[in-house]
Image 1 (cartoon, rainbow, N blue to C red):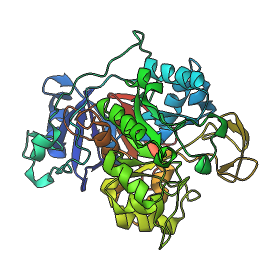
Image 2: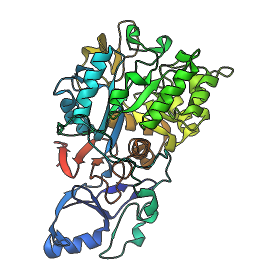
Image 3: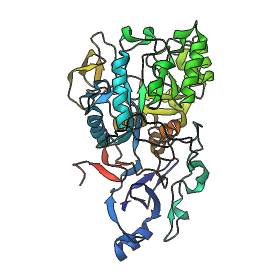
Image 4: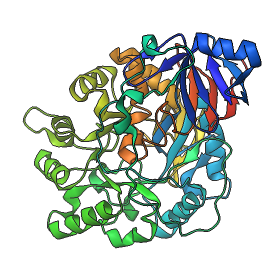
Length: 450
């Protein structure tokens, strides 16, 4: 068993000082520092178990970050579909505080997409889903004054019902071989394309764009957690959209609107029909105009959960502030959308079979089109906090609780609740990651941190 001491524990609505976080493979709970000190001084144990201490030295202690949308990093890309691709990404991501992620595919030939999805299936963690509600009540934090000597309180003990699991069943696994990763865990796949619009394809290859058809992805319904759709591509075939939505709903796949030329009415109609998510808001979609609200307007005018790339290139800081004030922390998720050059030096790279030029923190195709990002999650968080003034709990929520709730995994990850996996990130005021734990194991320690 281990305890993190001298840390500032980040809960859903506050930062808790003067307490320690107890964990093994799972979070055990939060205890007053005085109580922990007595146990340590007397027996160097907790309730009969040997106790190791991790000194956070005043840094923040939060649930491990979840990167919902990422194509690559450290020279690896999901579409490489090599045996070591996800291992390379997993190992790098923990250095940025990420403890779980959705590897994201590109618009490509289906045999290559399927090959990438098969690799994801082999590496994904099997978790039990919870009920379908996207927006759960926020966790009520532990009040330090309520902790009595010798008593362990869970971070969500005051809202026990909100953390209870309603089991829908275990996702089917078609591959009998599961491969353990060295760092961040794979939760499934994010299918970005090929069901997109050629008018807003971004850095995706137009020749492989296809009409939405659930039968094309049905064999990987156990793997895909998010599927991107440009609803206007089926204007003349509304029954196909209904079939696609129904297939996704039955398999608990989140339908996300993105890479789309949909107008406001089409986007709102798709959201009413079951789409609940918007892919990298503002990028690769119809923008906000005072007479033509577009997909951006629909996203802001509904309760759809919206991704935001906060590298300060994809979305201007002023627009980040507007979106934050409009949507609030509960409906925003920070992502990186990073490609293989993330974590590498500047130069020539590749994305989806296209040459990418990386310079001054920007990744672009030869024609100037932005080709994903090279930002890391901790830096994206730092940017957003600086640009908006959002609190530490709000910023952390946008990379932990919101993703876990939406994926139906909140009783397993995304919080410091008792029973959740001990996926923990320790970071300082400027969001430099100091420690990362996955399932209670230290998988990264910053060499500059003593």
